[in-house]
Image (tube, rainbow, N blue to C red; front, side, top):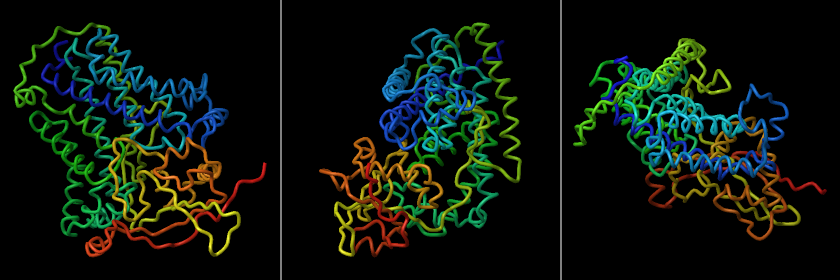
Length: 476
């Protein structure tokens, strides 16, 4: 079948696959370093307790068969090593069938982690990585030219990410329609980055231009992904530029980077190679029949399963970041359908005083990514995902978002649990755990230019109300 492959996309596939493996590496690394205090046997939301009430078909994965912290650690670090090998070119150095096995292993390994991650893994970019990873199984390797069908499926995935996000904005918060959302977003986003203060302080007319440009990038440009070249490449380039703007303005784990990776499925690799003065690619022989059959079958599966996200996008009650099956295949996406106008941060404090009174000295715990110390410059962590910091942002929106895990988190602070403390930037009680811990809600806002020059602070904060009254460990 001469139509089955397109040799001109060899460089596009190379970039896409290596970059996708790099995203896998970051995801597995985060799982390996953070799982014990979050979902470990003594974690805030332990996997063994979760699995006791969840059947295999609702959360398929290896941990349904066996779980221990040691086994999870080996599994996650094996994912780091395997994805690192693929980044280095292992999948292109083996036969086609072996390359597919490597990509399938990465998908199964990360699916197993996501399906026991509970609240800590309830983010759209988890499903996006799994769906892209599943498609990569059928994208071939250096032994065959890229299959056209899978390149189209990658574009369809990118279309759903961008177009779904555009629709949810137009249907959601009115500030997207009156072009004022960026008056607030850079300040109230989950985890501001080092440039977010500067983005927030841009002139308001420019913020309105940003919002209008975002609507074009998400509602018009994605349609052009399905047009002939060079228009499709130009559309992919615009999406890449838009995502790099988002990378510079905040921390959104690997969402933006993975969207950039997917855009290469629409880039004319031959034109890109010529631009970079790379040698011309010689078309490869036709792939084996069994491979063609598998690609056609996978395409048919995705087409059938696309009914659910397509219907969701057309619905007035569109839902964002939702998986319709336990394998996280052919999902629906979207982000920031509503924008917070105010930023509320939960500040956690402890004391080593034996008794409490008006003169009690409280010391604040420092988090790695979320705002705390008003003079500390926001850091860039993406594509690495600080899961506790992100959930703390949700806790500031409403205590209901923290109902399942905040109590266990405080309990581990009172115990001085080393694994939990490693999630933090600063522990004010290095010698012995505190006797009491409390949490209070502060209203945070970016300082003005005048305040910044006068104080050196990035944030100004005012106390609003109590989140958790002082608590101590119960006697055992």
